[in-house]
Image (tube, rainbow, N blue to C red; front, top):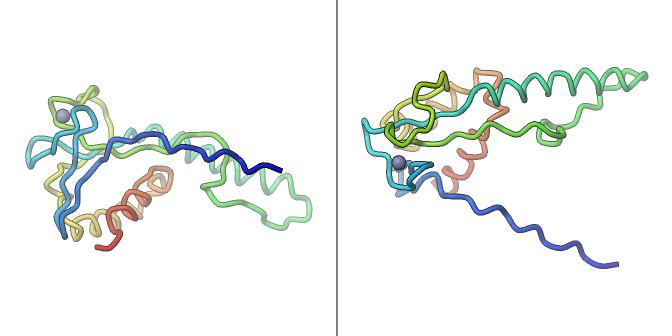
Length: 145
Ligand SMILES: [Zn+2]
């Protein structure tokens, strides 16, 4: 028996730099810091909604496939298919879809760990946020904060 080959993580452009409680967002297009009043954090809400709908269907199917009525729904992270909506920061002038109806807020409203705690509580009220990578992103930002 051979060990499976390690799967290399896809290279990702860092999305932020944290220095103490200060968080500087980096533009998804050019990689440069997004300063106050020059850009925003955003995600394509349609992607989150598609995944949310798939999740509801997945749970329904898990229940229907189980005649003993024992709930065996797996964690949302184990749901097959449907990509997670990704949060990115953009300079207004770099955003390839500046006129989209994406969910967004200005970077200066999310440039400290405390402000991100506020956003996390605010976004947690929205059902679709679990179908984005917000919580994963916050876990990364919050490491050793
Ligand atoms: Zn940029």
